[in-house]
Length: 72
Image 1: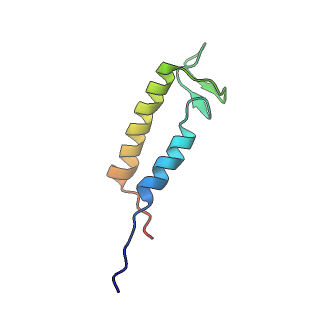
Image 2 (image 1 turned 45 degrees about the vertical axis):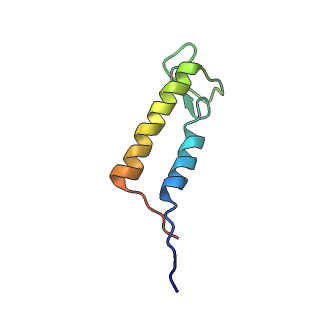
């Protein structure tokens, strides 16, 4: 019997980072009056763009460079 092995690492990293890097949840950069605010639950277009770039960079480092794998 051939068992399939599924790599859940990239999916788990993507979901966790999407939750944690949502603008305004933990931090927002840039904020309305400062460079960075924590837990303000607001967002803006430039903040979404900056968080998307951060998301891409950190995701690439974790999944491609370090190679996080969760096999089932």
